[in-house]
Length: 428
Image (cartoon, rainbow, N blue to C red; front, side):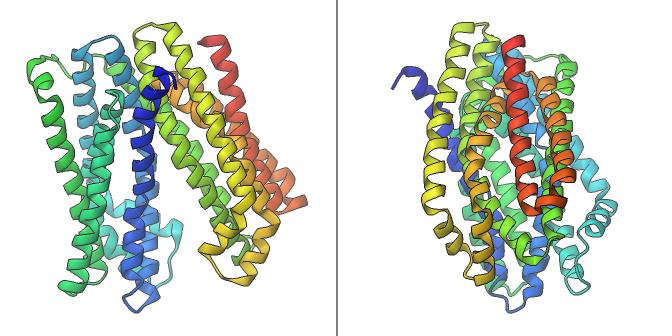
């Protein structure tokens, strides 16, 4: 392998491990409440987890915007700009978290109205929300810190933090539920403890590896270069809203076709998510290395990074496509033994097998565009792709049902890829 490949893997592999461990926080909660003796507890945790997944997903710009700008600052060898970006990101994280805490009641009621849990589930979902919402400063602070670490070409530290969070969550939740005898409160408090443990460890790692740099740099007023920071984050925020709209509608459109189709789509989306965990690792490499060489104005190295990332993306795509074609149904049967769902899944599994081919370029380009802070182009691609998705849903679902819904999803990924490819050729 070339030196550039080693650089990419040095960033991508720890990021992949992090991506895989992140969902474990929710899975641990589900596994614990699954042995409490009532489905109501499981439903309450599912509702609470969905609320926080949606809320924190919207604020993912705190990580992505920070990583691209920091990588460029590193490429320019501007330690002052890098430290300033860290300060801005953490201050914005704290401001947004404070707003969430201040508005937690209307936020809770709005999300519960949207999800509409049953009357027996609602009180426990409220209990879970009322405890876990106090982890907002920790979670959003970790977004800013993770983005800064990635921009500094260090994905090992977020990996360490993520693994430690899962360990603390398991131990704390088990102690509080089975040791102290708490129910939903114990699971929620275990999650809260894990979130703040992650933040504390991230800050300790920041001080350990970057303390001398942070202490020696005078960054001046925190408002310097704030315009760029806000522009990038606002673009990513609006782009994230497009992603949320598409994914929520995809889920609701499946639900309107009945419980079996909803279950099938949920299972098939696990294949999509598994692929995304790996491709996102290489997207992080695009953020870090693409931003670094873009900031250094080294066009040759930048284009080499882009080329090598697409080579790795093609290899991952071929691997996952082969695995899904050969063993996709076997994987789904590990997740469920419900005969009706398994039978229905056979009709749609080929769409999930096409996801890697349709989505590879979108994932790689997102990393490159974030790293170079060409976020307006990424927003444009998402808006156009979202419009195409909803148009195709309106045209094809009445004719082809769930097949039309999946075709619209693949078209959404392809349009993002094509628009960003055109923008790269003409603007970068």
